[in-house]
Image 1 (spheres, helix red, strand yellow):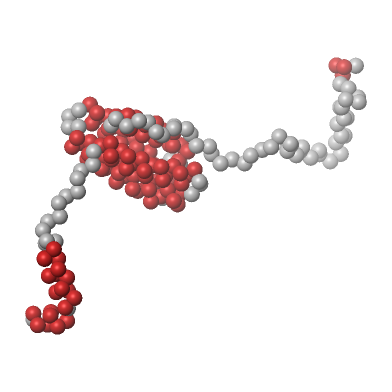
Image 2 (cartoon, rainbow, N blue to C red):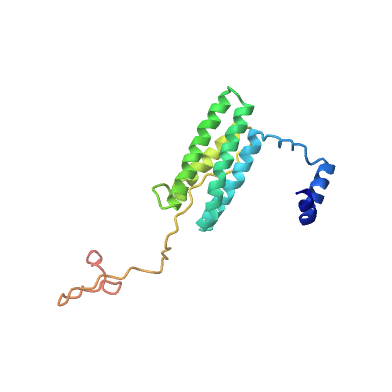
Length: 186
């Protein structure tokens, strides 16, 4: 069987020997854990993608980051639990992340055709919560809480609504203008 492996897969054998010689057979050390403030910064990156996509009226671009922000919030809870065991800050972080999970989740539910919230309905609350969260972990507030404007048709001052048509056979109203004056001016 070994002859078969050597005959058919010489590249595999070379790779195995090279990895073993380079010391790659050892366990890879775990990545350093994030601090709570680093986790908040990571979550804010996803938040900015979401906010900017909705401001551009491109909800499809916000969809992936809406899922990613959930992972970032989980990472934040884990980092805070490790860093702030038993402190009042940990309780505050849990409350704030629960609020963000609910608001981001409501937007995601709406995007999937279920009952939830639209971005304009929760954007201001999310921004305020993120600022509170940033302050709790010692970061400066960066998010300007403002309610996004709903897209509306813009009316201009020079466009007047069309008057309703007069019923057939009704007398036309007498024009009132500067040349005739009004009853109070006579």
